[in-house]
Length: 391
Image (cartoon, rainbow, N blue to C red; front, side):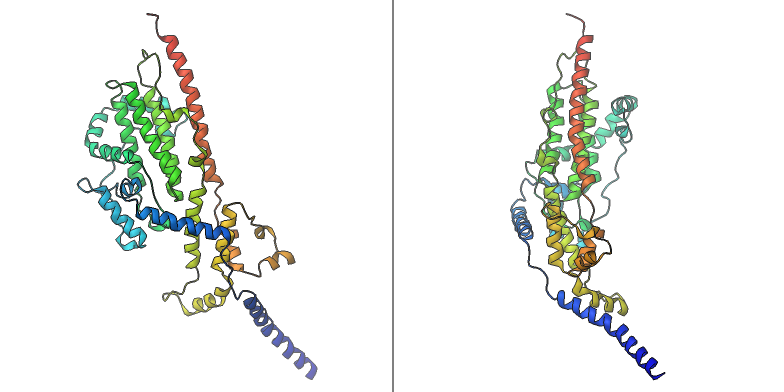
């Protein structure tokens, strides 16, 4: 009995002390965070340079105008945009105005653009619509505001602005784009073919410029949607030109392949890296609102989350200079040893990081859409030419 009690005593001590010893060993291994990698330092230098450039680019910056685009009719989009920019720079969520400034009108082509045969569907919708003139008249101020936006020659935003307080009024911008193009459609019989092509071209160049220069992923994907709308609605508009027209005038940008930089996610990835590093820096921050047990667990886990090492690894993943192999190791001895240093950071990278593949596919489809559009227009022009009776 005495030996049994002694055995139980040592067994209990082992059960209690072994986890503590293991914790202390892991604590010793994780005593220091990693130094910033070369890629992380490059990212930080780029962010500092971009923020400095933004501070000097208030004039003719379409980004600031776009931030205030949903302001009331009697307010200046630039003034409202500058206030929104100030709020973003100071991460002041309380001052970000989320109220709807005005009701958005219904357009006669909201559903038809998503159809496979969108040209015929939208053309039929527009022919049946008897309120287009009134719609455009009531929204003339929005169209004029959008034209002001298109005339701005630069787009400077910042990867420092987190997605959760983004103030960009995407719905209002895309609505204004459609109103602007519908206005061109309405005037197709009273203006030259070159004027219509130039109007479509100006819209396309603006969204390409946004896509080229933005460091914010959601801005990039909204610009992709707008570029697609430009080609779809533009095709509907050009399809209404008179059959007697012997040559078709196309927007110049339609005839050229979209550049690699317009379709690239590299700048948006910089923004995602910045957002991720901000997020991880606050993952295990103490909060007075949480209960005592959660605080204790957080304190125990905090040494196993290294922000800089995690940021370094994510930067390597984003630039394809490092392959994330820790996620596929399973429960083998080798797999477990990979998680000894910065286990929480590696776990977050393995389980919480979205893939960019779907976004890249969406962007790549734009060039496919453009090429298919030009092919269709060439075929349609040949068909129109054959229908013109000899003079």
